[in-house]
Length: 387
Image 1 (cartoon, one colour):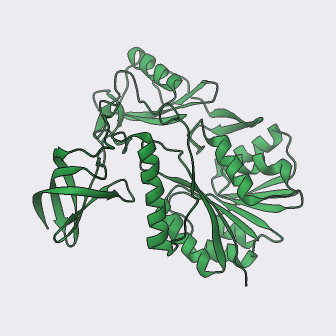
Image 2 (cartoon, rainbow, N blue to C red):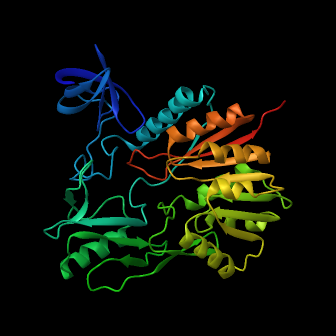
Image 3 (cartoon, rainbow, N blue to C red):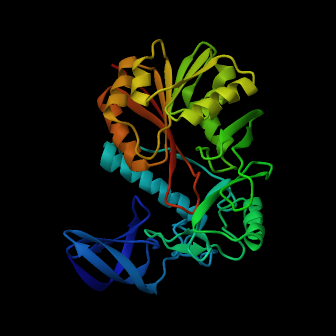
């Protein structure tokens, strides 16, 4: 291991949001770079690769832009504010294409549609950190040091969240720790952990005429602008009809299941999180939906208990699926699998396993749920391979 100081050119952006530069002895991964940048970097090398940091920009890529946030590159929230949004979308498409080719062995990926909306003001949820001095913000990258929230707030957040935080931090004395703030499509604010302010136990969302109540701490899609389009793409890829019996694995608080319920015969949702299952059942009752059942179970165990399922939706965390779950899904022999993922590497790994078990990746869409960050949401359709 050693440090090298040298001038390099960034070739491409790879998984994780790093720019890749070639060295004589390997590669160097440099954050906050753009393909075409010529940079003076300091690279800490180990074996055939290393991580570098920009010391000086020798020549900027034509795609490099000035970031709008004053704490960009310090705050751990964003990765891509230094390029145009249209170019960021192309970067993410290339990362997906490369991961599918490198990990899944799938090189035919023409026709990947990118679904996107605004690159700022989209987030309906944030967990704020507070340091010993009462400073409010987010952690630095790979650190627990708090970067103070800029004067005008975080550009990724819904404007109502920013207004609320900027107001409340003038009125309250905060202790070390953190707190959570969420908003709905109407701008209503829900909070937990703010000194002297009563916690909200739940927050609410309205999607496509349906009402959802979720536990304040539980997962829900963060992008206000794309939730309905994401759900519609899942529905499109299922090609559902009124006779379908569908399983929704990792169903959370029931958004996908309840959105699809009126189009199918029945849906069974499988979820381990106790609070999420309670929310899903409450939401079904609230919306008077009777053909959906929610089961609290580990995913692989729940799938083993299923019978007579024609189609499956899977929407796991970034860690993806385990071999036991994939084997259980394959044993059911569903005609269609719709796999939604927020990590292209684990997605590609799992697609390889499905491919080896007789399934063909037929369609893929990139839904940019997390603009200005390295995170990539994918929705895909797999079908039984013709024998």
